Image 1 (cartoon, one colour):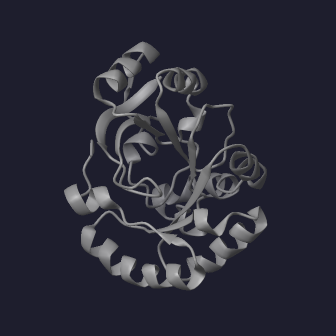
Image 2 (tube, helix red, strand yellow):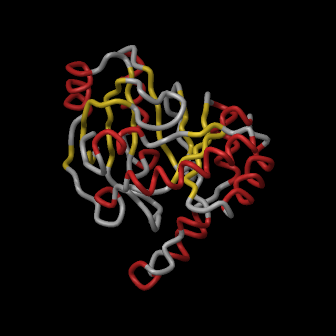
Length: 227
């Protein structure tokens, strides 16, 4: 598998926030979000080929029982299914972070699905070269329905402006999703911007009955790799 990075940190987002976890970040993505915070896995993919055994050796050496497989888009990684099956045999709790556009029969304890809203479409980047492809791919309702039916899940939305809530409400209704598993998270990689957006987003979360999530790793360490 092409791996951008392996690191041991705490989960900074979502229902398991604060949980010490090993992160396996695959390289490669089928989308190109305008605000992507890991462009080294999408716009300009980096990484090295690693065997499953080498990845598992790292997990065995560092994990306290929780592993997060992220990206990029891990669901397009060719050896994802055998990796997750090996992690399950190693008694790991497995979170997979995905945009929910691709399905695969993975072993997973928490499917962390982050459907990409219209605010993600890169109309201005690279003269819009990726915009139409991204817009066409970003929401796959049939895939989202299968994932949330088959796995314990959270729906995590990146919110850039209050106007995003209309799109979120419509998608939650379309999927008949459990409101308690819907998470709103402010878009941004600067702690001050996140705090500013977090204040109004927390109020919207209260009004809507959704969960609010900060980006704890950025609060603690800034927008750095390996944390």
